[in-house]
Amino acid sequence: MVIEGAKNNLVDFEVATDPRYKPNWHHEKIAKELEHIEVFGDRDYKILIITVPPRHGKSKQCSIDFPTWYLGRNPEKEIIITSYSAELAEGFGGKARDKVDTPAYKNIFNTRLKEDEKARGRWSTNKGGGYVAAGVGGAITGRGADILLIDDPVKNREEAESAVYREKTYDWFTSTAFTRLSPGGVVIIIMTRWHMDDLAGRILADEDLCKMTKVIKFPAVAIENDGIRLIGDALWPERYTTEALGKIKVAIGLYDFAALYQCNPILTEKQEFNPDWYVDISEAELAVKSTARYLTVDTAMSKKSQADFCGFVDNEVDKENFWNLRAWRAKIGPEELVDSLFALQERRKYSSIGIERTAYLDGLKPFLDSEQRKRNRFLPIIELSHKGTAKEIRIRSIIPRYATKSVRHVKGQCDALVEEQAQFPNGMHDDVLDALGYQDQIASIIKGGSTTTKPTYSGYNRRS
Image (cartoon, rainbow, N blue to C red; front, side, top):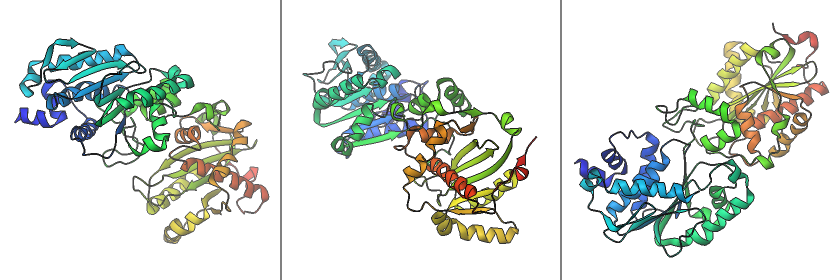
């Protein structure tokens, strides 16, 4: 039974050949996709991109265990593996070769090494198949591939930031590597992301290649409730807890953490929000200032994983008209959002709470009106309108404030905002940014005196 399971199931095979191996749920997910690849024709793509954080088991599973399991079932097939260096690729080849030669492997499969072809960078099976290792950009002509593995084509930030290296890698992929595929073959790219224009980014930006590509992404810290994890949960807590990942983020910085651990690279050279403009302020420093507080909300009336987040921006405006921001996002329904607004108002005592008029009237107002009457508490809501102005323009209206360093981020309270700013306007989410854009509209309303919530210094919230 164990042998039969190992023959048919990649994770069972990994455990059978390495009793110390303790797979996580993401290994199970990857294994199922790799098993589908083994059944040629049972897929609608030619390129599979798997992005996984460092030290989360991607190379062992994809570049060592999967090739040996695959050749056990298909000893006549050809595998080519490449990496940023020939030495690293040959290292994978050597470990895969050694696994094929173990008693545990031989107990499962009849595939054997060919006696006169056992080099770690090029070895063959007794049925005519084999495993060839090479560096990215290296020569693989003359060899065909049923499986072409590309494991980490980029070594470091320096290579990732080099437009010349990125162009060279993509040219090699399209002119050399991709042409090695057999008619039923597939490319598997296993990588941490360094740059939006890296190999994965180039493929996804190509109209033709994108249509034949599938992406599986596993961020180290969950950014949505995906049915397995809640937002903020670690991918592999037995190895890297949320606390440990937080320390890594502090150590390597937001940009490298977003790229390497969250699989979400940032195109730093084209950022519209320049990181040099950022000014932090501590909670203690802000506590002694006289401020008026304003909350803006970009609503999303769903908790489904594919829905947008609700974006929140809490702005304390001081006497010098500096903005002091806290910003966050969450996937919550209307009832939970209303509860959150009452709780926030109780704690923060906002002068105004700004909500975009269409979303407010269409989705939130019925719940909020009912609760205000029931609780006999009424919130200082300002209905905001974008008046047909495009979202990107509203967001860009904040840039001059940052450029003059008139905006401060409360330390540790603006990660979601900085992430969205770094990727603007090409990011997956802009909900917090949209809420921030509405702070500018509240400021204009107050300056124009068109609301009863216009603050005066005597009415500011003094904290001690």
